[in-house]
Image 1 (cartoon, chains in turn red, cyan, green):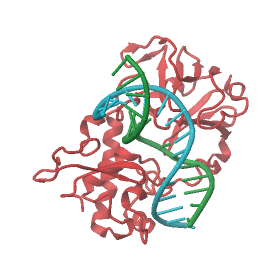
Image 2 (image 1 turned 90 degrees about the vertical axis):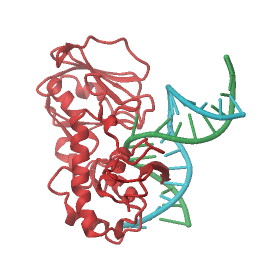
Image 3 (image 1 turned 120 degrees about the vertical axis):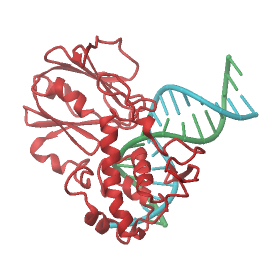
Length: 274
DNA sequence: CTGCCCCCCTGCCTGC
DNA sequence: TGCAGGCAGGGGGGCA
């Protein structure tokens, strides 16, 4: 999402912001439209699943897509196509008009998404960002860190990896996929994973994320890239959503199972994940 | 602090 | 055709 939006946002001024309702998951920030209008986007960053638009006003706009959120760019050339402004859709909650003709529309049927505005120099202390663990693709995420962080924990590894304080930015799909690649059962207690297996988990997580980003993400129902195109990593899922299908691990006779852990679906192969 | 459970909300699909 | 129930890429908050 960040990669798709950066070219149309970075260095550009926000000409207008239209709020079609006062809240998403939480109330939108006080006077949000006024605080954004006329601001230039210096840089579009990301931390965990939060998009961070650093503004010339000294504030940063924080955006989270929740489960069903989409951000759509129209009115400018993206790749080979000029995407005309589409007809307004139900659940278009926030619309930005950008210098250069781009329109950025935030659409979110379930409204689990969120936006906030906060002083850039206090960004690290923002309540949504303060407790986050290391970035899985960054230097702070490695075997030693993981061993230390998971040591003694009784919770299943699946739940631990979904805990954003342990590692930031992993969701249900990518945790399932990474555990399968590492040969670790999602049911296994986090504190009781052999060091050798934990060592494979770090590269497994990195590989899954890198491949998924390269594929433009995973489109199941709602997700679209910034240009409206579908992501296609869903075609590379090895376990997610594949209950009853044969395990794709070469030589593995297993069948993918679905179980529920802390209220979320887990998909795994009981044969090759231990 | 840990682990668990509920909740926020809409839409879509299945089965009866 | 209608309706109930289950499910969905997240994550805050309350509870024991």
